[in-house]
Image (cartoon, rainbow, N blue to C red; front, side):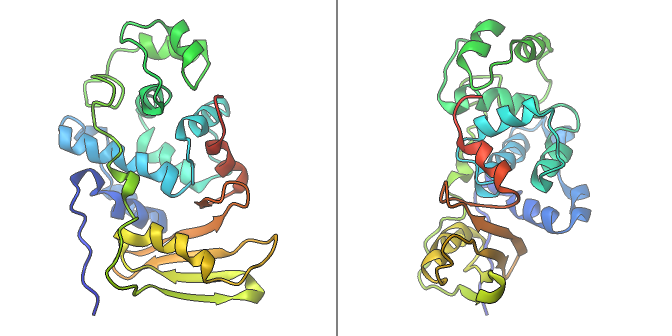
Length: 253
C-alpha cells in the first residue's frame, strides 16, 4: 500500500487537477476561472498552474520565447492539445495577456519601470510587437489579481519550478518497455517526484540511437500524467510535437 501524496504548497494545489483535465476533458468544468481571482490565494494557484504547464509539460525552458512565437501565430491550437488547454482555461477572457506581458519582462529578468512606454516594451522585452504593447497598455487594469501589475512578481510565481523533483527515501517507481514499439510505461513514485523519476528513465531504457522513446507516465494516486519524449536537441522531456517544444527553447522573438 502506497501512502497518498498531498500537495502542501497552496500555489501548486491545482496541478493534480490540471493533469486530470488533460487526461479527461470533463474535469475542465472543475477548473477555476477569473471569477475566483478576486482572492489573492486563488489567483496565485490559478496562475502558478499555468506557470507549471509550460516547462513541465511542453518542455519550454524559455516560456517567454514560446509565448512570443505562439502570439505571432495568432495563438493557433491546431498543433498542440496543451496550447488548446491554455487557450480554454487561461485565455477565455483574454486574461493570458497579463501572464504573457509578465513573462516577457520581469518573468524573464527584464526589468522596465512601471511608467515605461509601449516603445520601451517592444524594444526591450521578449516580444517586439509595438502594436500589441500599445493595445495592452491601453487596456484598463484588470479588477482581479494578475501577474503583471503590482510589482516585479506580485503573485510570487515560481513555486512550481521545483514541483515534481522531490527525492524519495526508496525508489518504488516501476518501468516497463517494448523496444519494438519504442514505447514505455513509467509508474512514478508519486506526483511530487514524477519529473525526477522521468529524468531517470534514460539510464534504464535501451539506447535507440537516433530514435526516441515514447514514455507514458502514470501516478498511482492521480492517474495518467502524460505521454513524453526526450528531445535530442534540448535533452528536455516534453509532450506533443517537437516543433512546438523547440519554440520555447529559443531566444527573443
